[in-house]
Amino acid sequence: MQIKRVTTEEQLEDAFSVRKTVFVKEQGVAEEVELDEYEDSADHVVIYDENKPVGTGRVRIVEDTAKLERICVLASHRKHNLGKAIMNELEAIAIEKGLAKAKLHGQVQAAPFYEKLGYETASDVFMEENIPHVKMVKDLSRR
Image (cartoon, rainbow, N blue to C red; front, side):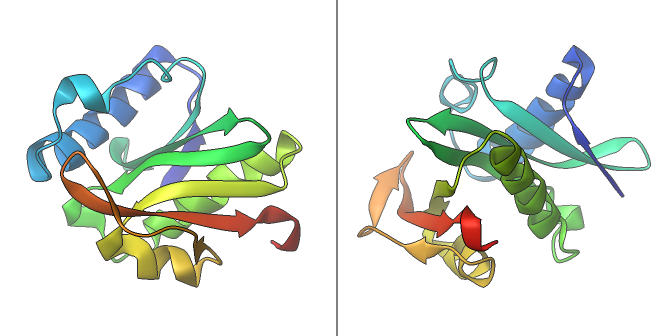
């Protein structure tokens, strides 16, 4: 397994392919919602297993905070700590950009995963694309 920061159009398309499989096909999110106006301004990462993209995520700066988004791993590769590797790389990018805080909108079923990585729930449950989410935050200066 190898994690890469996206630097080419091909790598970005690899990220999109993983997201389409997980969010559009598995979870029923509309493709026109999944791919949005922030793709070009975000920093993306992709995990490859023998040159096949199997996980991805992105981070962008919102005010003075890193917003981690679109974090997903193909069903065939879950339970191998790839989500943790994606999160670590996104947080590293945020720290390199001088950000001390991170936030994300985590699906309720994934909240325990984010809690293990130091995130704290900071909202009531809300719906995004008919999926229950919570806002979660982390102080990156204590990473």
